[in-house]
Length: 229
Image (cartoon, rainbow, N blue to C red; front, side, top):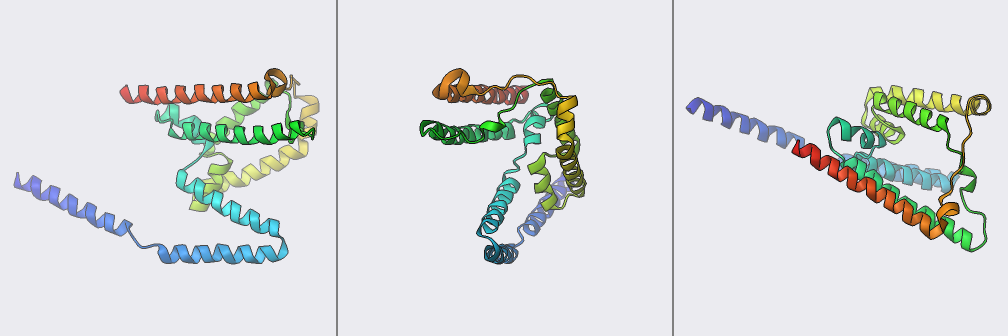
């Protein structure tokens, strides 16, 4: 009995020691990093104000991604792998917010009789879309991250993601270079669907939000069921 108590006390002391080591003061490094970001932003602003804005915005997005562990791959992978849908629901919330924002911009342009931003990017849906999405999903899971997740983990020092990033860039450039040929010979064109043309502008955003809400509820129920199992 005494041996067990002594062993438990030893484990507790070692845990407290590890916890103290983890609570290392990182304020000096943080201050230096912020100063470096500010200096680079000032230098970029002398060349182009747009570059400075991109630098600050990119740094802020990188920090948010790293702290939130936001990753599209995890949102699709975790429900089947671990049963957790927290990232899935975060992605759905992001979809809802961006849907509202883009809808407001496009609807405002429509009301003012201006060209609708992004209208040319409403492309047909076909079998090739489904096949490409499936292949891309497999690649994301094997690589361990989507584009944003890969960039985030490269910043954290994961060597596998550095390799993934290199081939991500190569594949993107290669695909962009030969896209016209692939589209001409292999892409089976379908029908382009623009929801405001089908449901009207108000109906389109309502349908969009209802679809997202249904996925959100389904994701929450899936996680609850996995926890009970």
